[in-house]
Length: 193
Ligand SMILES: [Fe+2]
Ligand SMILES: [Fe+2]
Image (cartoon, rainbow, N blue to C red; front, top):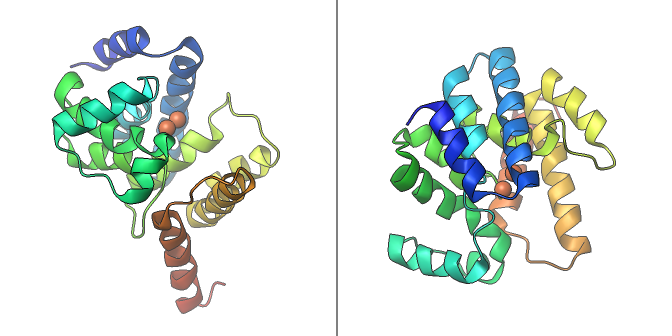
Protein backbone atom coordinates (compact mmCIF):
# COMPACT_ATOMS: atom_id res chain seq x y z
CA UNK A 1 0.00 0.00 0.00
CA UNK A 2 1.40 3.44 -0.92
CA UNK A 3 1.69 6.22 1.62
CA UNK A 4 -1.25 8.04 0.03
CA UNK A 5 -3.39 4.90 0.19
CA UNK A 6 -2.46 4.47 3.85
CA UNK A 7 -3.45 8.10 4.50
CA UNK A 8 -6.88 7.60 2.89
CA UNK A 9 -7.54 4.40 4.80
CA UNK A 10 -6.42 5.92 8.09
CA UNK A 11 -8.63 8.94 7.55
CA UNK A 12 -11.64 6.63 7.34
CA UNK A 13 -10.79 4.83 10.59
CA UNK A 14 -9.63 7.60 12.90
CA UNK A 15 -11.26 10.57 14.62
CA UNK A 16 -10.35 13.80 12.91
CA UNK A 17 -8.12 14.95 15.76
CA UNK A 18 -6.31 11.59 15.78
CA UNK A 19 -5.85 11.73 12.03
CA UNK A 20 -4.29 15.19 12.33
CA UNK A 21 -2.07 13.93 15.14
CA UNK A 22 -0.97 11.03 12.93
CA UNK A 23 0.01 13.42 10.13
CA UNK A 24 1.89 15.50 12.71
CA UNK A 25 3.76 12.43 13.97
CA UNK A 26 4.62 11.50 10.38
CA UNK A 27 6.02 14.99 9.73
CA UNK A 28 8.07 15.05 12.92
CA UNK A 29 9.32 11.48 12.40
CA UNK A 30 10.59 12.44 8.95
CA UNK A 31 12.39 15.52 10.29
CA UNK A 32 13.97 13.56 13.17
CA UNK A 33 14.96 10.75 10.78
CA UNK A 34 16.78 13.30 8.61
CA UNK A 35 18.43 14.80 11.68
CA UNK A 36 19.73 11.46 12.97
CA UNK A 37 20.29 9.58 9.71
CA UNK A 38 17.45 7.06 10.05
CA UNK A 39 15.43 5.70 7.13
CA UNK A 40 13.18 8.64 6.24
CA UNK A 41 10.62 6.58 4.34
CA UNK A 42 10.22 4.02 7.13
CA UNK A 43 9.98 6.78 9.71
CA UNK A 44 7.18 8.48 7.75
CA UNK A 45 5.14 5.28 7.45
CA UNK A 46 5.67 4.29 11.08
CA UNK A 47 4.73 7.78 12.31
CA UNK A 48 1.68 7.87 10.10
CA UNK A 49 0.34 4.48 11.11
CA UNK A 50 1.36 4.31 14.80
CA UNK A 51 -2.15 5.03 16.17
CA UNK A 52 -4.13 3.04 13.57
CA UNK A 53 -5.82 1.02 16.36
CA UNK A 54 -6.30 3.89 18.81
CA UNK A 55 -9.91 4.73 18.02
CA UNK A 56 -11.27 1.19 17.90
CA UNK A 57 -13.71 0.73 20.82
CA UNK A 58 -12.16 -1.10 23.79
CA UNK A 59 -14.35 -4.18 23.47
CA UNK A 60 -13.58 -4.63 19.79
CA UNK A 61 -9.90 -4.11 20.54
CA UNK A 62 -9.97 -7.04 22.96
CA UNK A 63 -11.78 -9.22 20.44
CA UNK A 64 -9.27 -8.35 17.74
CA UNK A 65 -6.38 -9.07 20.10
CA UNK A 66 -7.83 -12.52 20.60
CA UNK A 67 -8.39 -13.09 16.88
CA UNK A 68 -4.84 -12.02 16.04
CA UNK A 69 -3.50 -14.29 18.79
CA UNK A 70 -1.70 -11.38 20.45
CA UNK A 71 -0.53 -12.23 23.94
CA UNK A 72 -1.07 -9.37 26.36
CA UNK A 73 0.59 -9.22 29.76
CA UNK A 74 -1.43 -8.52 32.92
CA UNK A 75 -0.85 -4.76 32.86
CA UNK A 76 -1.80 -4.47 29.18
CA UNK A 77 -4.98 -6.43 29.83
CA UNK A 78 -6.00 -4.02 32.59
CA UNK A 79 -4.93 -0.72 31.01
CA UNK A 80 -6.86 -0.29 27.75
CA UNK A 81 -4.66 2.57 26.48
CA UNK A 82 -1.74 0.13 26.23
CA UNK A 83 -3.44 -2.25 23.81
CA UNK A 84 -3.33 -0.09 20.68
CA UNK A 85 0.45 -0.49 20.33
CA UNK A 86 0.56 -4.27 19.87
CA UNK A 87 -2.84 -4.32 18.18
CA UNK A 88 -1.79 -1.46 15.86
CA UNK A 89 1.24 -3.45 14.72
CA UNK A 90 -0.98 -6.44 13.84
CA UNK A 91 -3.46 -4.21 11.98
CA UNK A 92 -0.67 -2.39 10.14
CA UNK A 93 0.54 -5.78 8.88
CA UNK A 94 -2.82 -7.30 8.06
CA UNK A 95 -4.90 -4.35 6.86
CA UNK A 96 -2.25 -1.93 5.59
CA UNK A 97 0.22 -4.44 4.16
CA UNK A 98 3.17 -3.20 6.23
CA UNK A 99 5.67 -6.05 6.47
CA UNK A 100 8.76 -4.22 7.68
CA UNK A 101 9.54 -5.57 11.16
CA UNK A 102 11.25 -2.38 12.27
CA UNK A 103 8.21 -0.27 11.41
CA UNK A 104 5.93 -2.80 13.12
CA UNK A 105 8.09 -2.82 16.25
CA UNK A 106 8.08 0.97 16.37
CA UNK A 107 4.27 0.86 16.30
CA UNK A 108 4.18 -1.94 18.90
CA UNK A 109 6.38 -0.07 21.37
CA UNK A 110 5.28 3.52 20.90
CA UNK A 111 3.22 3.71 24.10
CA UNK A 112 5.44 1.99 26.65
CA UNK A 113 8.89 2.23 25.09
CA UNK A 114 11.36 -0.58 25.75
CA UNK A 115 14.96 -1.18 26.63
CA UNK A 116 17.49 -1.19 23.78
CA UNK A 117 15.25 0.53 21.24
CA UNK A 118 16.41 1.11 17.67
CA UNK A 119 16.88 4.62 16.32
CA UNK A 120 13.62 4.35 14.39
CA UNK A 121 11.72 3.17 17.47
CA UNK A 122 13.04 6.11 19.50
CA UNK A 123 12.14 8.55 16.72
CA UNK A 124 8.52 7.35 16.60
CA UNK A 125 8.23 7.33 20.39
CA UNK A 126 9.44 10.94 20.62
CA UNK A 127 7.56 12.22 17.58
CA UNK A 128 4.36 11.00 19.21
CA UNK A 129 5.24 13.33 22.10
CA UNK A 130 6.41 16.42 20.28
CA UNK A 131 4.46 16.60 16.98
CA UNK A 132 3.26 20.16 16.29
CA UNK A 133 -0.26 19.53 17.66
CA UNK A 134 0.99 18.51 21.10
CA UNK A 135 0.54 21.08 23.83
CA UNK A 136 1.55 20.33 27.42
CA UNK A 137 3.84 21.98 29.95
CA UNK A 138 7.43 21.22 28.95
CA UNK A 139 6.73 20.27 25.34
CA UNK A 140 8.93 23.08 23.98
CA UNK A 141 11.91 21.92 26.07
CA UNK A 142 11.32 18.37 24.89
CA UNK A 143 11.23 19.53 21.24
CA UNK A 144 14.58 21.28 21.65
CA UNK A 145 16.05 18.26 23.45
CA UNK A 146 14.81 15.82 20.78
CA UNK A 147 16.91 17.60 18.16
CA UNK A 148 19.95 17.91 20.41
CA UNK A 149 20.24 14.54 22.14
CA UNK A 150 17.80 11.75 21.40
CA UNK A 151 18.53 9.74 24.55
CA UNK A 152 18.22 12.77 26.84
CA UNK A 153 14.87 13.46 25.23
CA UNK A 154 13.82 9.82 25.72
CA UNK A 155 14.57 10.07 29.45
CA UNK A 156 12.52 13.28 29.72
CA UNK A 157 9.68 11.68 27.81
CA UNK A 158 9.72 8.63 30.11
CA UNK A 159 9.76 10.93 33.16
CA UNK A 160 6.77 12.71 31.75
CA UNK A 161 4.92 9.43 31.06
CA UNK A 162 5.66 8.14 34.55
CA UNK A 163 4.43 11.40 36.09
CA UNK A 164 1.27 11.39 33.96
CA UNK A 165 0.46 7.76 34.76
CA UNK A 166 1.10 8.01 38.48
CA UNK A 167 -0.84 11.28 38.83
CA UNK A 168 -3.85 9.53 37.38
CA UNK A 169 -3.31 6.44 39.51
CA UNK A 170 -3.16 4.39 36.33
CA UNK A 171 -1.03 1.28 35.98
CA UNK A 172 2.55 1.97 35.00
CA UNK A 173 3.95 -0.60 32.60
CA UNK A 174 7.25 -2.07 33.87
CA UNK A 175 8.65 -1.82 30.32
CA UNK A 176 8.63 1.97 30.70
CA UNK A 177 10.69 1.79 33.90
CA UNK A 178 13.13 -0.70 32.33
CA UNK A 179 13.43 1.52 29.26
CA UNK A 180 14.28 4.59 31.32
CA UNK A 181 16.79 2.72 33.49
CA UNK A 182 18.40 1.16 30.43
CA UNK A 183 19.30 4.55 28.95
CA UNK A 184 20.41 5.99 32.29
CA UNK A 185 22.63 2.98 33.02
CA UNK A 186 24.25 3.28 29.61
CA UNK A 187 24.87 6.98 30.14
CA UNK A 188 26.44 6.30 33.55
CA UNK A 189 28.70 3.60 32.13
CA UNK A 190 29.83 6.04 29.48
CA UNK A 191 30.35 8.67 32.20
CA UNK A 192 27.72 11.00 30.78
CA UNK A 193 25.36 10.98 33.74
FE1 LIG B 1 -0.63 5.89 20.61
FE1 LIG C 1 -0.02 8.92 19.02
